[in-house]
Image (cartoon, rainbow, N blue to C red; front, side, top):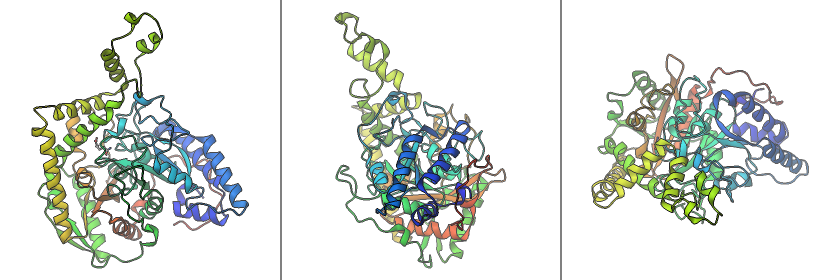
Length: 512
Ligand code: GLN
């Protein structure tokens, strides 16, 4: 049996029952990573030794009859925006190329406490700014469905590694679509939880009022399993919600009878690829067949989502990224560090020049563009015209959701206007790249939940993503509806044609 044939739920069950050891499982996925990473570039750091040691310890504890955590032996890939005390954390930036965090992100601690096995850190757009993974300082990720195409971003490495069966599950982060859009373009399932559902402590900040960590997996059921572990209050993040975490995996059974799903007619306006539109409409039909009802609704301010997001996010980023000055954090330009310690102060760079050169060398072009956009919009004289106004529009967008959720339980639609685009296609046109985020940014501006999963394929064999959005903290319904869809369809079971795994898993269980 190949790693791809087992869901995360199957893997933890097989290990718990002794049908598979954590070491066998971890080694199978590590071999797959090493086999494919040269062509996909999904991982920036592969922790073979650490993962094998963790798996060996889990097997020993199991043999000794000691209790094991709920994810015991499950290989997990973690986006390189989350701090890991035992592995470098670069955020795909030269600025942090040598950064070794002194602590684990809250989500990473939760994974370790649950006895998951962290196999490595995944590639991403630098500081999570981008929608194609081409802004990584360490090279783009290639979409497993077509290596000449982008996997989406910014969690492109996490999406691609799950799509290519290099890991059964991964952790991503989503500020304006970075879990849902790459999940859609890579044919996997990705959930952006409600703002505050998952702690952001140890997530390298991009835009703190929008950032949220979430699970990426082959199915909604596996996302539910992961969310159960990573969600919950953390006193170390004052914005994390002190609300009990439901047993998401146990709340999937109830049928969708009577669930009302909103459909926004403007989502189907010009710009939406006809093949994507067809896949999305067919998904609505599946939901209807499952007992849900579909209602056209209005989101009058959604059209301002992209301009609002591209003010709020860069403003917050320009403030968050001020810490990378070559002194407190990050890359320091070469001349200064060579000369530090010499007595001839005249040979040292002036402080401001040292800051400028360190930041100039450490940040890539898109990060610089965001810092400049944000600094401009926050500056005296422009603040009211741009940032303050964007906050008012944000409030209106949030109100659209509150009004819509009076009438419907969920909102469905496309996650991206097209299937995966070719690498290089949009890199020369930042505005074209920003428009990729059309359907995803409002979820973050409103702080509500969203999930995406495959709902079909284009004629050329690329996955089409469907997005569902829910009111705050309605993840049980979001996951239940997505799981129901996946019980009725098999789009999420399709695999890209990549070389077969060199190693198979020595278990013989029915696939989930
Ligand atoms: N593509 C969006 C951007 O470039 C969203 C990124 C994200 O969610 N981290 O900002």
